[in-house]
Length: 166
Image (cartoon, rainbow, N blue to C red; front, side, top):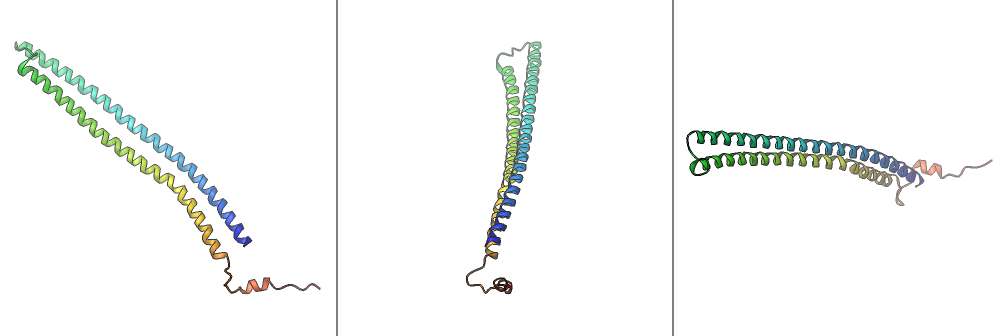
């Protein structure tokens, strides 16, 4: 029984240390995954802002050019079909920006999901190792602990023979 306790203690300490080391490494890797996720999301958002500014500037230039054409033709841009055309240009740009935003939200959601799955996988490994170690302790204890109904082995019988002192 003392042998089982020594083996169990040794295995528990070994499993515990291993799990602690793995958990520390997993936390570090999870932090790296999080930093990478944040960087990717920030890059997408920055690209989205740049693209939105570019499209708005192109709209402003296109509307100014169209107003100049209308003025050159003697048409007022304030009403009628001229205003409708300018409003249509703005709607097209707004829709293109909204489509880009939707696409970027999908990309960000994918990045977030992949990072969450990777973090979960990284952080569950040390727990599984620790549980496996404790399971091994119990299993080895069950195999090594003799039952009251077991026949003693020849080695056990020899150990129990008192030695004669001369």
